[in-house]
Image 1 (cartoon, protein in one colour):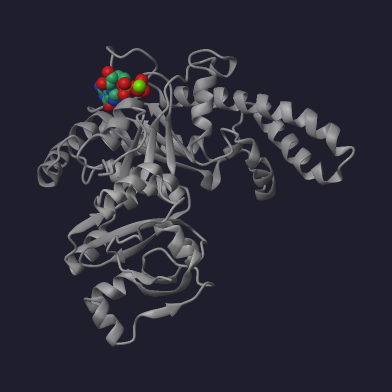
Image 2 (cartoon, rainbow, N blue to C red; image 1 turned 90 degrees about the horizontal axis):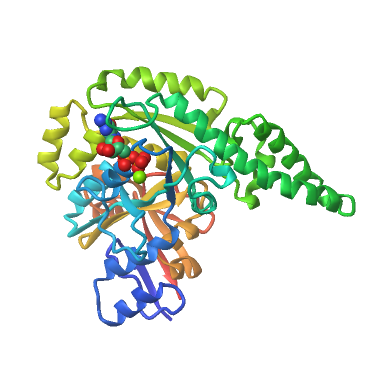
Length: 407
Ligand SMILES: Nc1nc2c(ncn2[C@@H]2O[C@H](COP(=O)(O)OP(=O)(O)O)[C@@H](O)[C@H]2O)c(=O)[nH]1
Ligand SMILES: [Mg+2]
């Protein structure tokens, strides 16, 4: 019987079989850094963003800016050897302030996986380019980042109108989905004659078919929530949220607001499913490659990019997926943890370790800004500002928590 708390010290219980991936289990035996262990296990629930777009839109440049440079690349030991999958951290000023308050030795930001999905060309849905491999990769992501070229450069082949890029990309994705939907629809219609429970699925598939055969992706189709849910098991490419990035040229930074407005108007039927952001990927990538934050800030300033668009982009993508953050903070470590909006306290505890969820007893909670104002956990406790919450509690974005559990 173990009884413990998690206080942001990163001391995940050791010797728990069947929970951590093999690599980190053996690392535990070698007495490796517990933080590295925990981050390895995190790969298992990190959300994935897939970069999708036509050749020369700037996908690989954006991928490098997000995962390879000094700005956002997260210090995660990464299990996969796939050069097209990387990790970007989610910048969060609240975490930095909590870490300063606790004088934490370690600061660990939340992170997302980024996948550079090459191979989308006109005709991809009919097997052109990478065809099926492309489609398989894209099915594995939680959200799609459409990279749409808006820069003019005679040395780089291809159209430079983002709307033209968007048209081609959307047609390919919609046609691929149409094929999946029609295959299933025929089957479901036959089965529904014997099993009336399948009727809602048939209706959802019919609604999807109507939109897709007009070349309209499902994120624009205004499908009701029940339909989108009924379609979820089919892993359709366009039944998910989209972040559209317009890649504007380095000499056209002043056009960013106009390009964003034009694209946003183009997505006026997509509601909350799409967010639009304009940036110059090349300049962002150059700045991101600089490790020293002060020097990097200077370069961004010099380019006229403010804090840079990468931060804004990752934050938008994170929110688009309905992801929220809770914190743990202590001298050893302050850390941001990702959870889905609406999760319960035990589910949040499970983000740290499955034992915390299984043996959940209670959570001690305070909102980050209140804690910061009081100056320390001890002080907050003294003045009775730490709440004790049970299994039914649903944490909110910005909660700082300690869990008590029993395994
Ligand atoms: N001038 C200019 N060139 C860019 C910009 N972004 C990307 N490129 C160039 O466009 C080419 C294609 O970019 P890449 O990231 O490889 O595109 P991908 O095919 O979508 O992966 C490369 O030569 C980049 O250097 C930009 O903002 N301005
Ligand atoms: Mg590329």
